[in-house]
Image (tube, rainbow, N blue to C red):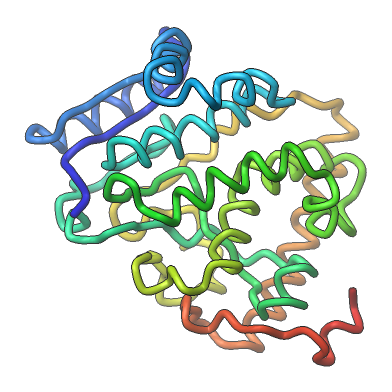
Amino acid sequence: MIPKLIIQTGPSKLPLLLRSAVGNVKLLHPEFEYRFYDDAMVDEFLSVHFPEYKSAYLSFRFPIQRYDFFRYLAIYKFGGFYLDLDVFLARDLTPLLESKCIFTFEELAECRYFWNHFQMDWQIGNYAFGAEPGHPFLAAVIENCLRAKQSPTWVRPMMRGIPPTLRDDLYVTNTTGPGMVTRTLAENAELADSINILFPEDVCDRSTWHRFGDYGVHNMVAAWRPRSSVPGRLLTRLWRDWNWSRVVAKGRARGKTRSVGSIGQAENRECSATS
């Protein structure tokens, strides 16, 4: 079972919006232990529990990759739930305690690598998840964070077709974020029975994306993204809107539901012609 523990991380001084979200988490979980790790506490955690990973942690290219890596290590070590600071909960997480490992559906996302190899047009999120201590899926996620850092060729298939203005964002996503976590799930199908994915009733309904089931919503502050120029932000927004409309149209043709059991090998099928 998942222990009654909630872990969050961030700077020691938070803006009012995020302090509100943290306060809400605590009020909904009076019987849970709550731990907040600022940078100094993360450093201490690594020194005590994972000294072998400290140099790798410090050498990640982007700060958000360090936050990503820490969240996997912390839940792997202690168990419990990790929540991004901009996750607003509507109810307590107690009903999820009986799971071994729980992640949430993030969004439909057309990635050539996922579709060609696994017939997947969706990905899971890493902004809210839970697990029992030592769960093997988190061990695999941690291993892939290090693998992506050490082997650019391993990451390359996930980066094909990405516009230059989005390459840094999606490099993070595909090395320590949702893209990498989803790839870990797809490539470790034998662990599927121990992982509960909170799918919405209709994955093609964009209003159900970025939610922790019916427990809460990810506010998508995304403070980690570097601020680009006005033209760059406009081009990024236009590309994302175009891409999402295309992905949703394809998704509707495939049906409104998805499941872990639908992950399958699709190599050498007609879709591989698009790679």
